Each structure stands twice: as structure tokens, then as C-alpha cells.
Amino acid sequence: MKSFKVVLFFVLFVLASLSVLAQDTVRISAHYLDSRVPLLKRDAGEETIKGYSASADVKLFKFSKFRGSAAYEFEQRYNVEVYPDYPFGMGVMGDLYRNVKTHYVGGQLGLNLGYAVEPFVGYFVGTNKIHEDANRQVVSKVRVGINVPFTKESHFFLKAAVDFNRSYGSPSKDMGPVIIVPTIAGGFVSPDTRQVVLGAGFRF
Picture (tube, rainbow, N blue to C red):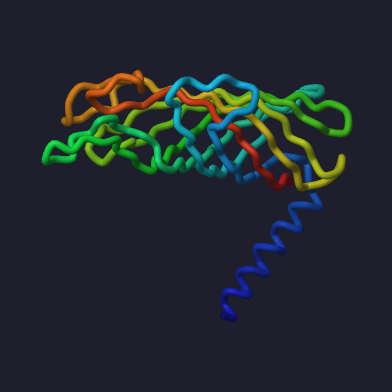
């Protein structure tokens, strides 16, 4: 317990020290994900996907009101349909779901407006494994959103965005043909999705 308190104190001390030298160089944030995007038409049969993500963002350059950065993000989505009409045996068919973890790297470009409000756009490339019997696949996403600090000089900020996800190549390994279109049965699917991103973070 004493060791834990020492480590906690050290971490808080480092964060406080970095805060004093705050140049908005590094940002860390956590987000809630939900595919129920307001104002966007949903496809027939499209299912709700929820999850969370966490990211770290490092400033590469600042030119006028523009801020360019490199970022890493870990994403966890729950109950993703990966194989429609899966043969469970004894003539039983049903949709197969898995929790899907994805690791992304990418870049972001933000425009600092009045009161430090920052609309931004980002492009990420990642990799995931939608099923234990599927090959690892390459995925990408475009993120369009806005960062809003609590105050102009605050180290804490809120984030709201929309992600547009896309997969590349074949996720199949040895369990039948691959179908990327989610409305056609017969193999693994890795459908394009979009999702709302709501989160908060700390910058220093």
C-alpha cells in the first residue's frame, strides 16, 4: 500500500510539473463509442455497436492557428456481428458476435478558433482480428470532430466526433468465403461503420 502511494504521488507530481510547462504538446483522452449517429440515415438491419477507445496525441508542428499531430488509439467494440447465419450445428443457424479490439496510428490536423475551440480532422490506419479463426486485417477510419477546453487555458477538454470506419482485404482464414457486404450471408463480414465519439481528455 505504501509503495502504491509513493507511485501515485510521483505520477501526480510529474503531471503537475508538466502542467506548469503546458504547451499543448501531448494530449491523452478516453471516449465512449456508439454507432447510433444522430441525423444520419441508418441502413435497414444495421445493428447498434458500442464500445470505448483511448488515445495519445503528440504535437508535430504548429503553424499559425493550425496544429498537426501524430496519434495512437486503442479501440474496443462490443458485440460486433462477424459472421451472419453461422452454422452452430444440428441444423442451427445464427449470427456470430465477437468483441473486436483494434490498434490505430494516424495523424490529425486541428484549427484553433476563438476561445481555443478546435475543429479537427484525422486519418487512422489500424489492424484487428475479428475472430480467432480469421486473419488479422487492415482497417482505417476518418474522424471529424471538435475539441472544446473547459476554459481557454484549461488542461482539460471535451471531445465530440464522428468516425467513418472502413476495412481492407480479406478477414477470412479457413471458414468459408469472405463477404464484406454485411447483408449477404456465407462468411466472415467486416462491414463499414460509422460511430459517434464522446470523450474527455487532458493536455500538457
